[in-house]
Length: 131
Image (tube, rainbow, N blue to C red; front, side, top):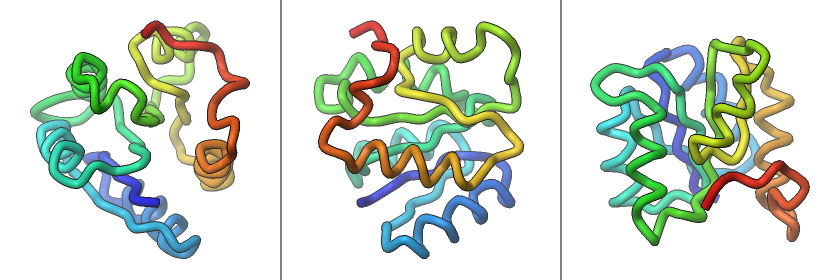
């Protein structure tokens, strides 16, 4: 799979990239939301890990733009967030993300999200997000 990791934190990108490349995936990287949107349009990744707080354009504005475009309405996007307060998961799902991973990043959870995406059911067992 082609997976985009969009995060302004270099260490977060490096950890996820090394894990995913070690599993045979092609990894693209973006340091802000504008670059992420450009790479999504040009490279059509299969999945995106998207930090919510990035310079120039945050993850919420990126997901809002993507979900308005028919080619990207079904693109699997997992939010990366330092916020893990009660209600955050619901807020992230309602914004259009398929799931979220709280920081500090647990690489086992990243692996699990990729495995779920690759399964025939995809995210069928997850709370549905508004279409």
